[in-house]
Image (cartoon, rainbow, N blue to C red; front, side, top):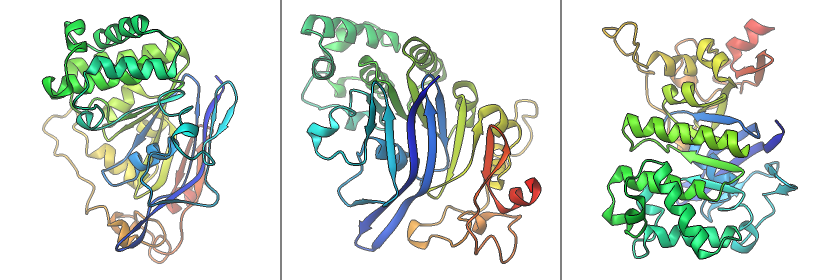
Length: 330
């Protein structure tokens, strides 16, 4: 495998009527070709904002940090941060990078058929003619589990059910065979059978084209069966990352442990679910020190509320940003 994506010191703030708020704070990670990385955390943890930053899809009130660097390595290295305007960003948006959004109704134009939109984007980003683009679009609709794909190809988004819209959006994103796919909760609206089918399709395309995927989800069960590595986010900061096996079998950060404890246990169906206590704070009331200390039952008094923990290597493939981990490892 070779390096596909470098995200370094990603910091993103938004100017609002209530002041400037921090959505993502000093996030760094890498992705290799042929690798699937899960980005996990509660709603409001900054996962989607992080993903949209890779394609510079955040709104105009977004302010990036001075040290932020995002580089995509394909045939050449593309430095994404200096790119501005739709023409300059065309090389990554829909071409080298595709994104599956959470809400399919917002991803299709309601007055244009699904098929025409798929064909149009293929003709923009590839050298296919209309006939070739039509054939590939129908094939991709069928591959994501849409029956009678040739008929659905001619329909409009409002004529499809919620799950079918989600599958059509996935087919559209995958049809250009991007080098990097950002999947934002791509299986949320799907039943388990179609969910498994879509996950298998993504894995097949990774193997076939050497594509990399950033897979955003709150479902650690999906992460366990889909991803090679995982990064856990909380209130805009990465707090633990490593191989899926390491993080799920040997979680180090109290927040990661809390997420895993909240999952149902198949070996003990009567065991009560243990939620993470409290609520994620508002970005306008961002805690000092470790952002999780307000909900942490093992926080070190006087330290966790004052000092931001740095990442400590637990192993060669596993690291966590926690003062407790720092004490154990050192």
